[in-house]
Image (cartoon, rainbow, N blue to C red; front, side, top):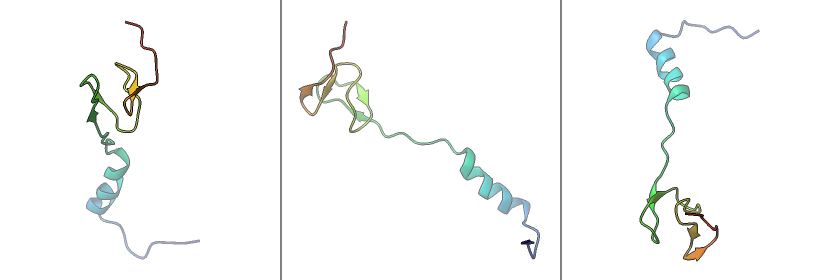
Length: 60
């Protein structure tokens, strides 16, 4: 069974643990059709356009 040679310091433990709980940054771009913020490479949820073509019919 593997046993650590030395005790991990508290700062090393916290530094490793912070990566687990760090919030994920989400990239945001602007829709060229309606100007609303959207995720890149996704259909705009406000107007339904992607790549200059209407993909979804959005009821208003």
